[in-house]
Amino acid sequence: MLTIYGVYRSRASRNLWLAHEIGLPFRHVPVIQAYRLADPATADAPLNTQSPAFRAVNPNGHIPSVEEDGVVLHESLAINLYLAKRHGGTLGPADLAEDGQMTMWALWAATELEGNALTVMYNRAGKPPAERDEALAQGAVAALRAPFAVLDAALRDTGFLVGGRFTVADLNTAEVVRYAMAAPELFQDAPAVRGWLEACHARPAFKTMMAEREREPA
Image (cartoon, rainbow, N blue to C red; front, side, top):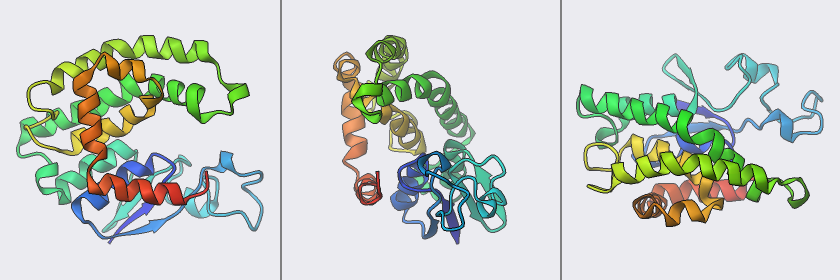
C-alpha cells in the first residue's frame, strides 16, 4: 500500500489530492514541518521534519515523501507524475509525448510560478498582517503576469494542459497556481486560467482533500 508522509497543510496536499482523485488506497502518516513547532526536538514533539524517524525516510527533512512497494520518493510534483503513470489511468500519459508534456508542465510550474506565487500568498494572506510586505507581493504579481499569459494561452483550446482531458499536469499546476489566489488581478487578466482553476477546485477529490486540510490545525 502507498504511504504518504506529510500533513495536509503542506505540499503533501498535491499527493493526497491525487490519491483521492484516482481512488488509490493509502496510509497517511502526518509529519508536521519543524518550523511550526516551538521545539521539534522535545520527547513529546509530534513527528516532524527533524524527527530521526522521518529523516530515515527522507534525509532532506522535507515533506512530502511516499513509500510504495519498496520505492521511496520525495518531491511532490515528481511523486504525482510517478503515481499517475502507475495508477492514474487517464490522469497519466497515454504515450511518450504526453509523458514529456506532463513532465514539462511540472517543471514549468516549479520554476516559472511557485516562488513568486508563494511570495504573493505569504505577503497577502499567510503571514500576520504586521509582517506582510505589499511591495514584495506587487513585485511577485508583476513577475507572474508573463507566465500567467503563457498558461492562459495553453488552456484556451480545450481547457486542459495535456490531451484535452484532466490529467496530473492540471492537478500539479493547479496546486501551484492556488498559491497566487491572493492576487485576483492576475486572474482578471487570464480568464482561461480563472475558469480552469475553478473547474479543478470543483472536483470532488479536491474538495475532499481541502476538507481534510481545513480540519488540521493552522
